[in-house]
Length: 132
Image (cartoon, rainbow, N blue to C red):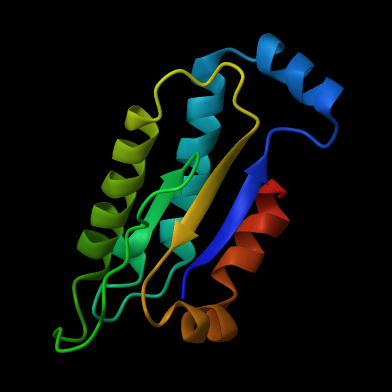
């Protein structure tokens, strides 16, 4: 199962188009970076599988998802969060031109995503802070 949330640039189509033309592309990338940073910093770390399974997407495609099965526990928290952040920042770079884009999806396909969400409300907290 894949857990995801879609981050909307704005609520109405007219406002979305206006917002896209008004906001420099770099500001959108900075905002995505802020979301990525917040997301990995509020994510729990045990094996590191969950925090390193986040990805950004603009359409279909295979989401990043790592299993915690048979992985050692009590991993280095800062190192795992840095790896998760690096993955998301790489995704941002690969998005290409953002002009005309109306939504970008933050997703996590770790097999245990439902368990983590139920216990830690990561996606709910991201939506509450950044909208969605």
